[in-house]
Amino acid sequence: MTEQTETEIVPAAQPASGKDEKYYLRFTLPQRYLHAVLFTSFLGLAATGLPMRFSDNAGARFFARAVGGFGAILFFHKFCAIILTLAFLYHLKDIFTRAVVHKEKGMFWGPTSMVANWKDVKDLVGHLRWFVGLGPKPQFDRYAYWEKFDYWAVFWGMVVIGFSGYAMWFAPFFAKFLPGWALNAVLVVHGEEALLAILFIFSIHFVNTHLRPDSFPMDMVIFTGKETEEEFKKKRALEYQRLERQGKLEAKLADKPVYWWVNFAKVVGFTAILIGLVLLVLTLIAYFQLNGGVG
Image 1 (cartoon, rainbow, N blue to C red):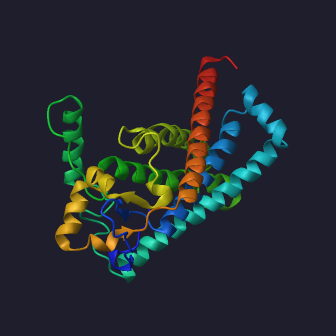
Image 2 (image 1 turned 180 degrees about the vertical axis):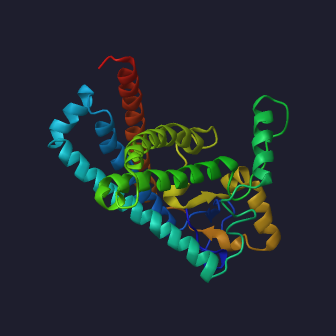
Image 3 (image 1 turned 90 degrees about the vertical axis):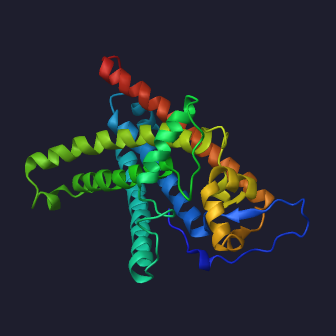
């Protein structure tokens, strides 16, 4: 997601007591709003796209009857697609503004960039060695290699699934410059890539983000935007050390998340994860039934 520059972050007052834990800002409010729009619209696309993808499945037909037919499902699918597209365009606009207009350093290379570099390769190898007890656990900077993988998987999916979806939606327009076989291909590409995205988000992304031992049962930072100093040092030791060395660590200080917001975020987060896991199970059931010729 996008982020404000460090100079735009106003340090919050911290309690004087040494017993009170420090909190640091990781994600700004616009970033968290964008993530909320992203996962909400994606859940909507998954919930409406799966019944159309497996329309012969008994469960899909039952769901269609309950909501008013496949026409109603398609309407909500398109509505969610528009919302997700607007969020994606906003993200692209933000990247362009920061990189070109504000000339922000580190957007496309360096420790704060989402672009993979040689360190990510070494971190991946080092992590695999650590998994089997052959080396120390690698230390990470602003973004770990799996977070970058998650980001670019979604970015790629937005381009491929989005283009193929709009090509089907506005087929007469795209038929003016695309051959017939291409329009047939986008139908296959859209369905298979969307299925892959659902499987990826509801398994790999959920595991990477929330089900790892140091985040289980949920990483709250994307909802609150803040994390404790202990979490900061443990998860991204290199970023903590770099900011401390540069004298920029104090600019990241933030107030402790309010109690009601943490509880609200937990309800929203666990609900999203539950919906995602249910859709994952239903997807696997429908897929194997279809390919096994059962239902």
